[in-house]
Image (cartoon, rainbow, N blue to C red; front, side):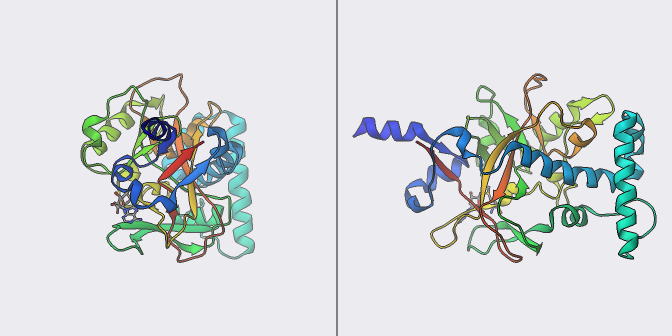
Length: 295
Ligand SMILES: C[S@@+](CC[C@H](N)C(=O)[O-])C[C@H]1O[C@@H](n2cnc3c(N)ncnc32)[C@H](O)[C@@H]1O
């Protein structure tokens, strides 16, 4: 009996650490079963990357007054790709009689709607006593779409996280044991800011720290506020690990809401995205599954 229990616990991959410890046995019906680690992916890494790139490129072009210096440092073919995108965008908007003149002039939510077709926002959860949650406030999220990112500091299994984890309900555990601290307050916030200031690639920032505020530059970076599903509200999104490839454009890394705790350049940066498990309509709250059992 004891052996069976230990075996079960070892196979059990918990997602949000303190929540699991308190609630695992209360809510067995909300467990998620996957058969092997790689099969925990609902969509391909290529699809995750292309969704992020689509949004990040528009965020970049919408902020040209601040990005011009970086744009000028890019190789000529990358620069011309951006100018081409801008010209295309303007001519489409002119035909639709929506143009305002210069650049793209989109705020982050408008950029999200333009590229992904929906907008998400934080608001009081539809569940009692669950604090805030994340809602689809405009448009519709099709099944298999990247809906959010889980922001925060990335800790390898051997890195110290004890003090940051005390009373912290935002520690997310990846399938392979890597941890993400998505808390936007206290010591977690100080550590993220410090690592974010440390890591640069020449003039380029390699991560975004605005998710620590109420208005993130990357509007996807609110995944840490998604609440757990319940017997009444089934999960409509799930977590999926995504390692940022070395080929990811240097000028777009500034929108990634994650940073490594330790400065280890050769390891790809871990991100976690939340993917829609079904079509999600305007007004619906997002619910994930904090428990995953690998068997
Ligand atoms: C990662 S945080 C999610 C954001 C949180 N709702 C907030 O406003 O800070 C996890 C915490 O949200 C709350 N929570 C998440 N899912 C819940 C549920 N189904 N029922 C009640 N509380 C929930 C618990 O307090 C949990 O520790």
